[in-house]
Image (cartoon, rainbow, N blue to C red; front, top):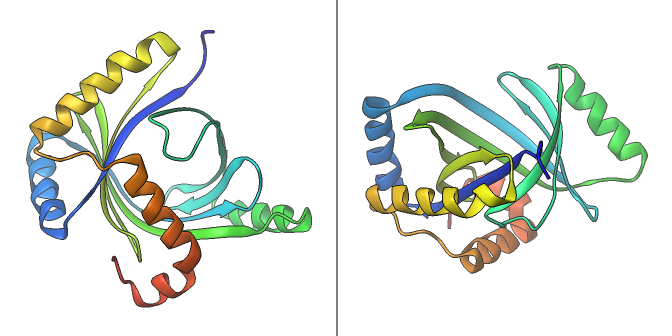
Length: 185
């Protein structure tokens, strides 16, 4: 099936020191696309439904598949700055509540045709994410191998899906306290 937007991504937890090293590397060796602060609400429902406000505006988006899959189809609706609270009110009115709220500082780079995000998420930690969008299932595996090779070049061990699941579950249970005091462990 053509015309899909399939996000192929690899991400890994990194230390604060590695984050700072990578920040310097990408500032010297790639194009800084944007620096962003994001507040993202994940809703308590069957689908992976989110709303986000950031420096550029806000959006509603839905991702198909499981949360830490390497490739997922995405549907996104861009909204104006003022629409974040309206979207939140609509979802609340139909009994969709924010299950988790993330507060993320993101630096996004274009590096050799790859979208690179260096993130610090309050209460969650430091993460690097490499991403490419493909249009067909056939391209997924090739791009996934390319991203794995780039992680090796950056000397980053890819965090397992199990590690992400464990950290995600911990954050999901404790996010209210974690964003209050900012712990990353």
